[in-house]
Image 1 (cartoon, rainbow, N blue to C red):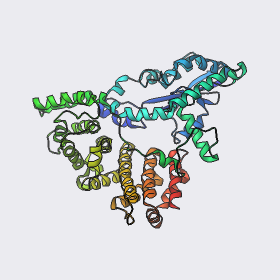
Image 2: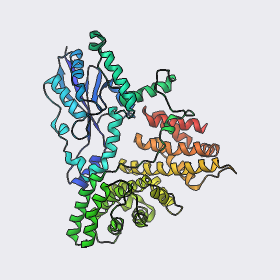
Image 3: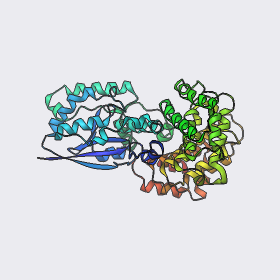
Image 4: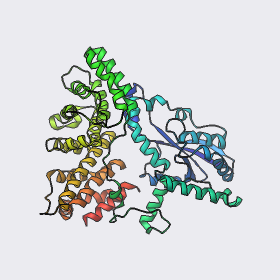
Length: 502
C-alpha cells in the first residue's frame, strides 16, 4: 500500500522575514522555515528530540497557526514499522543537545526522512536557507523570535532533569520487547508534549502522574507570563548594521572621524555582558541620525533604530540612552499618528527599542516615568490598529511590559495597606485600548498579549476594573474573541479573563 508523504512548511518568523528582508538585505526572503514530515497519519519533526503526533494536534498546540504551505513529496511503499525503525536508528543524532538552529535543525531531519521514504530530499531552498540571513542585521532581530518559536514548535524542553528522566523511561520501554519497539516510535516528549499534557490536565484535572505544577489560584496562563518581553542579546547583528550605517554615512558625507570611531566601538562593546555599557557616544550618534532634519536618508533611520533596539539591552551610563529614546519618541509620536511618521519596518523597530528598555533596571525606571509612559502608551495602543502584523506584535510587547509595571505598582500599594488603590489613568487606558477590537485581531500572539495585559491589571485592581469593563460593554469583545479563537494560549487566557470579569 502506498502512503502519501507531505512536507508541512511553517514560517518561524511569522511573516517578519518577508516583510523586512528587502529593506535589510536588498533581496526577498519569504520565510525562516520549520518543517515536519506528514505520513502514516502523523507529523514527524525534530527539535528537542524526534517526535510525532497527529498533524491537527500539532497545529492546535501552537495556537492554531498552521503551515504556510503543504508540499507534496510523493508516495512511499515503506511500512510505518520500517520508518519507526529508521527513527530509532537516527535518534542519537537528533537530540536536544545536537540541535543547532543554523546547521542541524528540523529541516535536516525532514530531508533525511524524505530521503529514506522516497529516495529524494526536500526542496533545496528549504535545506539551504542561507546562513547569512540569520547572521545578517535582520537575522539578529529575528533570531530571538525564531528561537522562541523553534523551542515551542519542536519541543526543546527547558526542564532538563524531567526531560532526561522521561527520555530514559522511553528508552527503557523501547528495549523491553520487540513487539513494543516496533509498534511505536521512541519519542523525546519535550515541551510540545508537556504542553499537550497541560491542556488535557486543564480540561480533565491533573493526575498524580503529571509533573509538579506551581501553585496558582486557577489562572495558569496569567501565572506563566510574569516577565517583560524583551529581545535576546543579539550582538552578532551589530557589525552588519554598523557597516550599513558607515556606508550610508560615506555616501552623504555626514560622519566625522570621531563618529566613525564610535561606530567601530559599538559591536565589541555589545559583545560584552549586558552590564557593560555600550561604547560612549553611541546613543548620542543614534540620536543625531534620528533627528528629523539631520540630512541622513530615511534608510538610516531604520538602521539606527535597529541599533537602538540592541543597545538598550545593555546598561547605559549618564543620560545618553534617555536622550536618544526621547528622539525615538519624537519620531513615533509627532502629530499623534504613528502610521504617518515611519515605515512599518522602522516603526516596529522603534517599538521594539521601547520594549527592550525593560531589559535593564535603568531602562525600566525611565520608561515608567510620569513624563515618558503616557506618550509611549498612546503609541502602543494606536499601533494595535496597524495593518502590519510585525508592528502590532511590537506594540503589544510594549503594552505587556507597561501592564507589568502598573500591576506590580498596584500590588505593592495593596500589600502596604491603607486606603483602596485608585485606578490610574494609564490602567484605564490599557483596559479600554487593549480590548477595543480584540475580537477582530488575526494574530494569536498579539491577541494573547492584549488579553494578558488586561487580565493582570484586572487581577491586581479587583472588582473596580472588572466592573468598568463590564459596564462599558467591552466584555463582549472578550466573548467574541473566545467564540472564534483557535485552541491555544490566547483562547485559554481569554477564558481566564472572563472568569476574572465575573
